[in-house]
Image (spheres, rainbow, N blue to C red):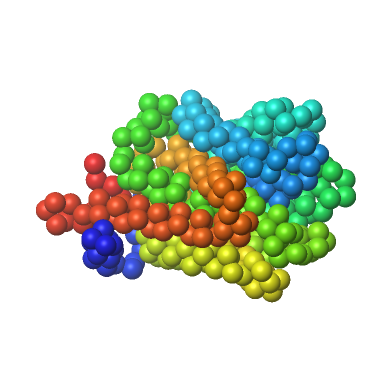
Length: 423
């Protein structure tokens, strides 16, 4: 309990106030920031639908390809690995590319990966296609977040980022339920076909509505400097561990609802939408709180996740309780705007790769959560046991956050700003 005591004392010394925000020039969009943010959010809708729908249609894919449920969980892991490797490589080696051109290229690649998924001949081909689809995921969100931030005043950066992420959360209200319905009526391939077309639509909208933003002084060497910053590594570790709990539940939520809650397949889209509504609410609220305190928002969201996930074991037995619980679990995504902007704050002059690495970390959490949940099921534990497994991961994230806070306390007793990093 020593670490918990130290964590509480250090955390208490951080004031609940606006944190330091680097000054950046304000960029004006050709047709207004609203349409530019909408174009970026549509990309989030495409990516969110493709990522989360892969989990909801997992039983359908497994049945069609004659594979076990844990084996098909590798489809989720393949996508996550694509994100993990693609995000830093693209943002480092294409650091000099203008931001709008990079976004168009990334969404075109994402569309191609999903269209390949739709025509994959078997299990192996599908894994390769999902890996390709994952490559642009993190870089897109990282660059989109930076573009949105440059169109907002300094004290509204987190809320601007949350508007980009709004597409990702709304995907769970409309995109994922629609994809689930499509997979049941027209086969799982139709889901990836629709996602691919949505990606192409995003590329067109970005070319029209997002302003031209030069890379400035960015270079591969400068972006590589992010790996020398300890707080970046600790923050990424916190996300990789702490957010895995959501994916431990989400990866296996469809079979849990069908086999434990005993809902009809027709009710699945509604219940999945409940989680999506929670994500949308959490994202908006999290953006507002993050503009006031990054660390307190992250801490509160992780505590919320631990509680909401732990109750899934009991709530999954009844329809109404599991519906409310899924909404609560979705609200835990409030951590996203806070983590995204914190990484941008501690990254110094390597913000592009840091912002993209955030999504690498989230997909490490995706892979870890899917693996931990699958491991519990493979060892004979019940489907609803993914809830307590996820709660343990959330508690692990709190522990890593405690380490991050302690590292910001200098030996002299001088506290480094929560929004900056002193090497």
